[in-house]
Length: 418
View 1: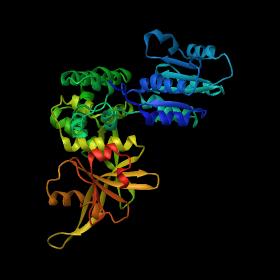
View 2: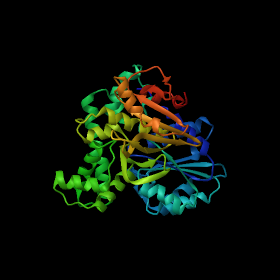
View 3: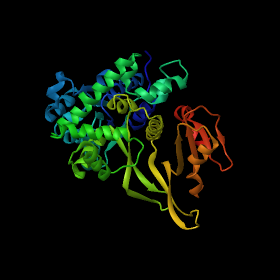
């Protein structure tokens, strides 16, 4: 099978090389962080002329390296490998397994000829600690499962054929090592239950094991829908006969976010230019994992497409919110009423902003009018884009709204600027 190059991450690593900061590669477990660091980046360094003896690599989740989870042992081992004044590249996998790893990494930073790269699978143990402990000397690179463009490099099939598989199985690298549907589905189910949820339950010593599983199911069913902890609590009460508190639900969601399983998209008032904290949307980092959690029974293509677009925008380094446009309109009795129109995504990248609507099925002009109605209420000059699932020749309507296909958006990084 072909290898996914993951050149975008190699480019980021190369750009940060030698910057006197700890490069922290984060992301959900089994998304390819270790392969990126130990195979792709290591190969890249050697191709650049780095002597293999100047690459110090340790997989800390390997039982053979258990002794190095002791911070002093790890520190002394790395220094013992340094025998000259040339640069040494320190590659450490799953650094959060080392107790007090912050002090170890700070110690490495004091050595001018050490360039340090670490991976970790939990944002609470890494990102927040970088801010407080490294005082601006930590540099995070977030890795995701394979993007659709990555999948297309593995096969010679038409993108539309591969897209239907991507909707169902997502981008976890191991999934694409087989073409057998049953093996893919079993792997994803096992990964969710035996790796992700099991890790959360063990890490936080949860007593309500069943409850976090139920919450995960509810979030998976509600992808692309506005919700909040009160609504989720009411769902537990009415459908599960549970008395779980809002605070517990909030904590559980934080655990899922910290493990990179789900992302939270905040609600933004476009006209008022402010965030509205009452409701949010939650998206899964991988569609295959979401589908596996629901036993592949709820294939809501419209919401899955929205989730796919959200993930791709984040991969491109863009800031993404869900938008509302509040307006005052007259009803059929000419009475003034307040209405809110939804914009699927408000996307910011530097000085650029895009408004994006996701439309899986658009069979009629009336449906198109409905999907683009919110665009016409915004009133500013930023780019407005409708992304549809079906193939379409890119075009602008009389209001300047760009319509493109999902595959064009996923495969062509400049498509938003057409």
